[in-house]
Structures are given as structure tokens and as C-alpha cells.
Length: 200
Ligand SMILES: C[S@@+](CC[C@H](N)C(=O)[O-])C[C@H]1O[C@@H](n2cnc3c(N)ncnc32)[C@H](O)[C@@H]1O
Image (cartoon, rainbow, N blue to C red):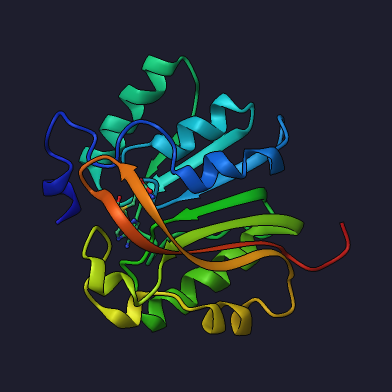
């Protein structure tokens, strides 16, 4: 499905980073290592690289990765792009300072739990998770995101899963998104910014 959606010259989520990532760029430090999970057409990984991070980006859509490579080239940055499925992704333990998981709500609860465990594994102690998605209220807006309610996040769900983490921000809110044709209009959003526990 994603391969087909991306098979157009347009960047369906735009070439600018997610407004969430841009708004929180102050938390990023040049030289840090970052993993962009299910990065699509590259807008977020390329932005992280522009901020001076050393970035690996993965996605299962070949057409997305191809466009992401073109975007990185156009912006003059290097990103280590990997065509891979999260179902079989090897989460290298304590490897990254930052994980960006932005609009990855294709995963139903069981798969989501595996992904969250993988993210926890691959972050270094003290590493930063930037997670951004939709709440169930988004089903009223229909301006992007999946139609399966079970895939969406609530504050309660994330605070239970990440309760032991140092939570810097956990907020449900509404905003206008203008992120390509894919995310456009009034949206019911949720941000989680948290640091993995453990001795740094
Ligand atoms: C809504 S898009 C978001 C893309 C990107 N994170 C962004 O914000 O622009 C969801 C992405 O998840 C990817 N995806 C879906 N299932 C996946 C899987 N099992 N493994 C890796 N990527 C997957 C799709 O190819 C798509 O690029």
C-alpha cells in the first residue's frame, strides 16, 4: 500500500519536517546518533541530518526510500537509509541517542508493543524518544492517519507504557497540520517526549 502511495513525484507528507520535530529541535545536539523509524519519504531523517545528527532511517516502502534519498541529496546531507520491515528489524541495543517515531500508527497493539520494546532496547540510557501521532479524536477529523482506533494513542496508554521514563512532554492537543496532502487540516494529535531511564 505505501509503495503505491509513494509512487508519485509529489512528497505526500511534504519535504519539510513534521511540525512536532521542528518545534522540538532544541532538544537535538549535533553529533548525536539518531534512528528515524518508518521514515517514509525522508522529511524527518533529512531534517535530523541537517541539524548535524548522524542518522539512520528505515522504512519498508522502496518508493519512499528512493524519494528520501533524492531529498537528502537535494539538501546536501547524508543519511544511512535502510529498506527494512519493522517486523524483522534488528534493534541494536543501546545504539542511538535519539529515536524519532513520527506517524507510525500502522501498527495494531501487539505490533506496537514490539516496536516500543525495540525502541527502548535501541536507545542509549538517557536517550531521547520523540513520538508523535494521533489520538482517537482524529477519527472525527479524518485529515490523516489510520482508520483503526486501536492503532491510535491516548495519554493514558503512553503514560502507562512509558511511566518509568523521564517524561518531558506528554500532551494531547488539536492543531492545524499542513504536511503535504497526507496530513492536512484540523488534527487531534499527541506528543510524547521522554528519556529512557538508566545511568548515562
Ligand atoms: C504515515 S507514514 C509516515 C512516514 C514518516 N514517518 C513521516 O512522518 O513522514 C507511515 C510509514 O510507515 C511505513 N511502514 C508501514 N509499515 C511498516 C513496517 N512494517 N516497517 C517499516 N515501515 C513501515 C510506511 O511505508 C510509511 O512510510
